[in-house]
Length: 239
Image (cartoon, rainbow, N blue to C red; front, side, top):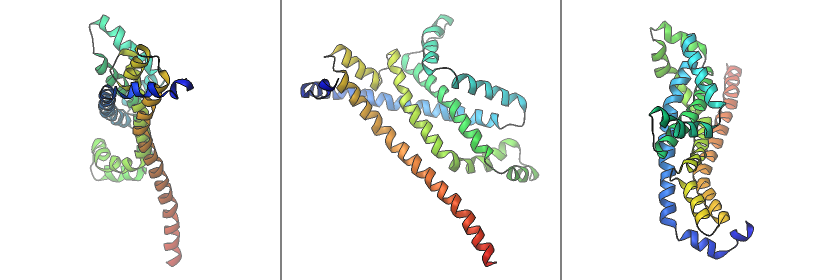
């Protein structure tokens, strides 16, 4: 493997295929964006259900979260792609990958949303109800806008995980970056080292800026939480 990485002609060979790699890279980005949109919708819906006062929505949300968090994404993908056609439901590999990755990540995002809602003071709920707001209005107009700032760092981390999970499309010939790199290495000159290293570098270029921003934003929120009690105690001392 090291010998492959240090061999110049192997790099020249794979870099000569840059149009194909670029197309695969764009497929990966497209799959990630579509899967993220689906995951956000499902995450918000099931996050709200998990925070409901009624037992039935909470139970439905719990079943969804536990099932998808405790079964491998690969098994879910293979079931949808290979088993559902026997039931008359046939999806192409790209659509199948987007659905599976989106639904899988939605389970994790719903837990992030639930935790964010749980961090909001119950007094704000009571104040909203006293003004005649319904549960949905309270969530949409009062709670969720405050929750966004709190859940943004873990939400971005889930986005990073989602981008990396799109590599499972390679298992069903999804035309993504990992599939093209693996296909080139297998059918070309057995240059697995350069192919996987280049694919990993491209994933890194997407994920590293996002994870760095999430870490810095989380540190900023922690500093603000520390400063608020100090400012409040300072005002009390002045008074």
